[in-house]
Image 1 (cartoon, rainbow, N blue to C red):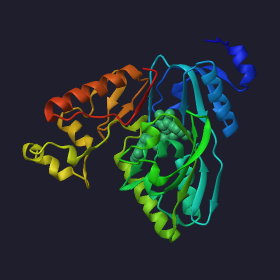
Image 2 (image 1 turned 90 degrees about the horizontal axis):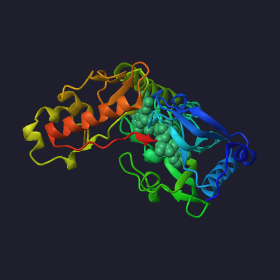
Image 3 (image 1 turned 30 degrees about the vertical axis):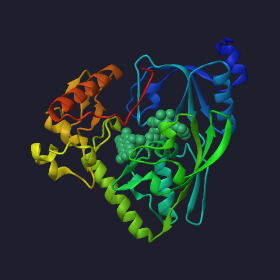
Image 4 (image 1 turned 60 degrees about the horizontal axis):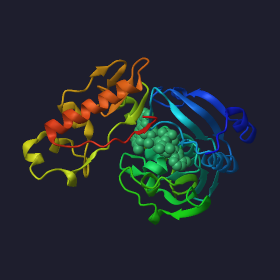
Length: 321
Ligand SMILES: Cc1cc2nc3c(=O)[nH]c(=O)nc-3n(C[C@H](O)[C@H](O)[C@H](O)COP(=O)(O)OP(=O)(O)OC[C@H]3O[C@@H](n4cnc5c(N)ncnc54)[C@H](O)[C@@H]3O)c2cc1C
């Protein structure tokens, strides 16, 4: 394997930095240093960084808004490539946007242009690329409902291709981009609909107020675990735990209920705490360490498994563990 040092790398990838603390790039405010860190402002930048990482066998990680991420205290011994591409264009009821555009900006632009369909995303941090990968959703809406097409860079053949919505294999917090790790999302076409600005504004405001009142305001990575599809519950589950019937929303059982029933809300390890406001959030109440968060995650999984026989699956992505 050809080895390369920082100075040599910097010559071929100007803008490359080293030992950059990742806690400053995550909403959790947790995480050690990236050995190398590069902000990709254009597709060309991004392709070059990926090609160089591959050529020199350096592990790399694509970072969006860092809002669904737990980075280890040791950091990441490779190149973190932060997606900064954030151009967008609005044509009729379609928004063509690069992957690094913040969701908040797209929600704002949709309101401005009287476009409905994206109100549910109000208050979700992160980028549209991250949202497409995880099929982010809230209040009954999901990214899959507004995506028409996704432009990706395929790491297998180093070529760009377009993937139609029907081929994205979207599911609850799932997509082809999450299942197969060989795609980097470059840009997305969102298909919205025209509606009255007043109505769009009202709905958006309602969702923002809900978040402010019910969700913790401390640093976090949002929901730690995926909610449970009721089709996944054992037959006698609702007989054994009748209280669960009251909290089922549509076809899902909120994990927050299970965590609450295990008396874990408010549980602290170090400066990490299971939120009392929303027990599926772990919050950073000081200078929390990733290890503390990991311990809380493991404890929650253990307790929920032992009380309910349910194996929780993480929604948060782990880097550097
Ligand atoms: C307070 C709070 C509230 C939240 N509420 C919600 C909610 O209601 N619903 C919800 O679904 N989520 C919610 N989240 C979680 C999070 O905001 C979303 O999952 C968001 O879509 C993640 O996007 P990101 O850009 O921050 O991704 P990151 O955290 O940067 O990355 C997450 C994963 O996506 C990958 N990725 C990012 N960009 C790309 C790209 N361009 N191409 C390929 N892979 C990429 C990364 O490699 C990583 O594996 C919340 C988070 C917080 C902190």
